[in-house]
Amino acid sequence: MGVLINREGAPEGDGSEDGRDDEEETNTLTVNLANDDVGGVEITVQRTGGPDVESETTSKASAGGQASFELEPGHYYADAEGYVGTLTAINVTEGDVEITLQNESGATVRVKVTDAETGEPIEGATIEGVCNLHYSGGDSYITGETGENGVAMAQAGVTPTACDTRVSAEGYEDANVRVHVPDDELTVELVPEDAAGGDSGDETDDDATDGSSDTKDKKTEKDSNCP
Image 1 (cartoon, rainbow, N blue to C red):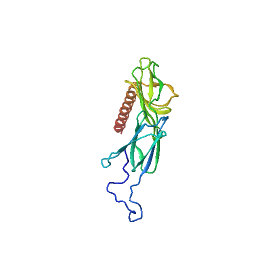
Image 2: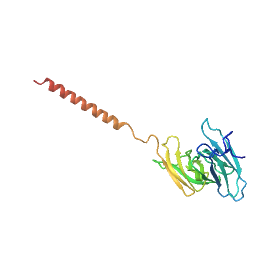
Image 3: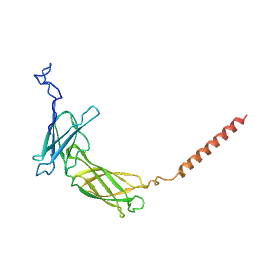
Image 4: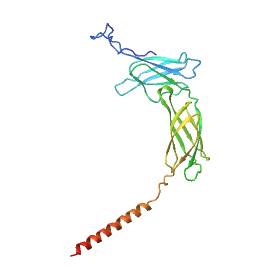
């Protein structure tokens, strides 16, 4: 399907009053597919924007591991079957852009989650995050959940990659870690939510303050009675 290049109804001619051509400016978005040795993979580019921007979708079959699109300036998403599409819009407003979509095959990372105080494994902890948040590599998620032994084989959509990951479990403070795929095999310790300490210290401080205030008041009263 072709890409709209000229505004609808735009006249063709020698140009505007300042000598520039009236043809709508376009930029080239080149989408590469990692490990595309066969070709013929359908790549789809969709324009996104506010209510005043008409959504346009254009598709092309890859050739030589890539496809190029002549696009009006704007923001676009790119996707292809069997590949991880961009989760963030691609800015095609300031010139030509080239990106690479990665295969969905990905890799797994062994993550063990334990109680920071007892060292006991935590069952049911969730691992989730966003990996490789760059247009050049496509975007993907890392997800997983620990079993009875506190271990999760977290699945990342692309590899190699780095994932900003949150590990959470009921009754514990969340932990934020950076996971490198496929290199990391890591243990994450979660701190119990009630491990911040009691209120006894605050109560002691309040008592001490009240006592000091009472003493000061009594001294002031005594001084006022002196001739």
